[in-house]
Length: 205
Image 1: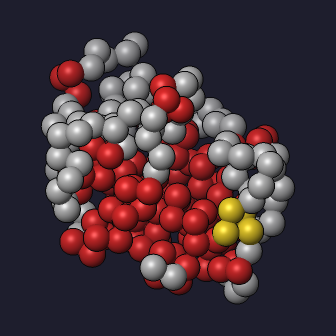
Image 2 (image 1 turned 90 degrees about the vertical axis):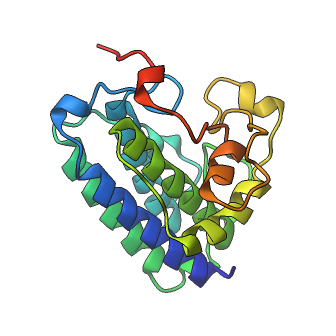
C-alpha cells in the first residue's frame, strides 16, 4: 500500500474507534481489557495520548517523550474524540506523506517513513477498536477491506524476546489462528486471544 491508501484506512480505523468509544460511560472505566493489566480508563488514556503523539510527529516534532505520556481526564470520551480529530487532520495535511516521523516510544535514534509510521497507527487503532469493544462486551467485525489492509502490517511486526520486556507494545504472538486471513489472525499475531472475554480478568477497583 502507498501512504495515501494507508492514511485512508487509518482514518477509517480511527472513525471506527470513535464510534465504539462513544458507548463508554463512567461506570465502564474500571472494566478489564485485553491489554494486559490496563483498565478501560487506562486504555482510553493511552489511546488518546498516542493520537496526540502521532499528530505531533506528523507536524515534525522530534524524539521528545513528553507528548506521549498519558494524562488524567475528567471526560475521557470527549478527550478521545478530540484527539482522534487531531490526528486525522494532522495526517491529512499536505506534505505529511513525504515526512519522517519521530516515534520515541519505538526509537529515539532514527525516524520512520510516513507510510511506516501511519501503518503503525492504523494497526494500533484497528486492534484497539476491538480491545474497547470486547471490554464493553460488544461485537466487533471490521470490514473485509480493513482486515486485508491491516493483516500484512501485523505480519511484519517482529515477534520474540522483546515482546516479553516491560512496556512492550504487544504480547508474544499466539500460534492458533495466526495463519488464517481473518481479523482473528491479526489479533493472534499481536498476542491477543480472539476469544478474550472480560470474565477472564478480575475487575479492578
